[in-house]
Length: 116
Image (tube, rainbow, N blue to C red; front, side, top):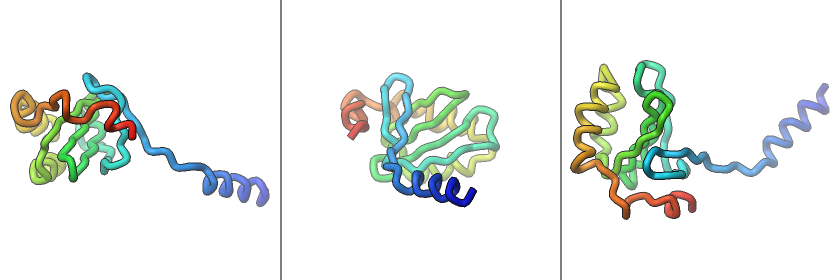
């Protein structure tokens, strides 16, 4: 029993740590290496939120589908995370704005950039 546990622990320690990748609707594969991700259990709409503070990239799992927004300021991310209704905040303050300022353009986050 001790040998089995020791072997399991050694296997976990010796295993390379791969960064997580996700498939984002309309963007392709995104590497989450530079993102801080949080699972959300207080919303019926939002299941997970990942944010890259350096780039201002926000990835949100909405009913199982990942969507990405670009140029999201840290203060908007913080307000989203503490909003009483994350779904309402997402729709009013991020999705509505994505038609203009938070919409990712072709040169923002390509699959090649995120696969590094």
